[in-house]
Image 1 (tube, rainbow, N blue to C red):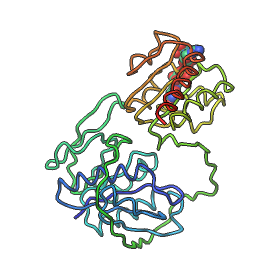
Image 2: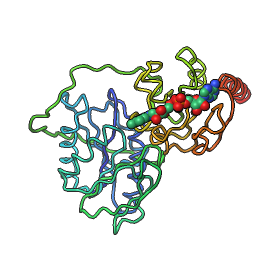
Image 3: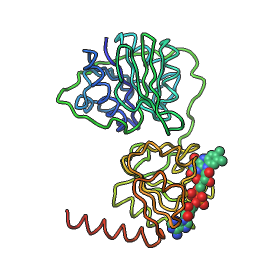
Length: 321
Ligand SMILES: Cc1cc2nc3c(=O)[nH]c(=O)nc-3n(C[C@H](O)[C@H](O)[C@H](O)COP(=O)(O)OP(=O)(O)OC[C@H]3O[C@@H](n4cnc5c(N)ncnc54)[C@H](O)[C@@H]3O)c2cc1C
């Protein structure tokens, strides 16, 4: 019996989510007196997983799995769960994992809790705190099945390093049946830092007046090593790519720091960023709804505030180099 995790990767490289899921699973495994087994699908080098608490990696190498396919991945994961006799399975809350986890749960006859925000409140009965109400509240959900599937909310737990090293073994999983869909072309956004992996996001709204004014948002993001994002109308108008649209109908953002510039704070925008830890809002209207959700607010013109922020951050970096 072990705790099993799905380690997300892109182009053969493990994503940050894989290490966070590993860190979280390690603590569950310790409380259950067991170990962590990771499933790594077409990952070039999975050795770093040991640093985050993984004891064993099942290495799956199969060209048919180069592109994510929820049905095929769920099949592989379910077979790994059976092999390891795992009772707890942890995945991230990325779009892929939210697609994969329910399929896997059905195969395993398991209860699935998405958007978990902390370690289980208890393991007998197995109770998990999760985000609810479009991330504006929490609930405690008990999983009553023998096998439990948990989707961990991004950045909710963070990375915890361990001293161990993981062993690795090849795992051959034949994929059965018609997968139904096949990726025939990939058009990838060339984000410098992807929103899903970012610790910090700098986001712009319609208050920036036009695409020609995004230079200062990009510069601020560069200094902070942040990803850039935007509100829905900004991407609808073609000022920024759709891959940057965050909110209820866009990407969810669960960063350590979210800086919103010229964004009003409509409920649909907040739904996507509520789980970010610290929110900083720059808006010229003191009545903008976003200030109610902000940890720090700057009432001012973005075209004055952002250049000053950039100047101060540059000074700070130069003095602390
Ligand atoms: C079904 C549905 C789903 C939706 N999903 C999403 C979603 O996923 N994500 C999303 O973002 N929206 C979504 N929306 C749209 C949402 O309701 C808002 O219309 C949108 O978020 C507003 O974008 P905004 O804040 O950029 O623009 P605005 O509402 O126009 O706000 C611009 C803000 O900029 C400020 N401002 C103006 N000039 C300056 C300046 N010089 N300096 C500083 N501040 C300035 C203004 O005070 C204002 O607060 C959805 C709507 C619907 C109906």
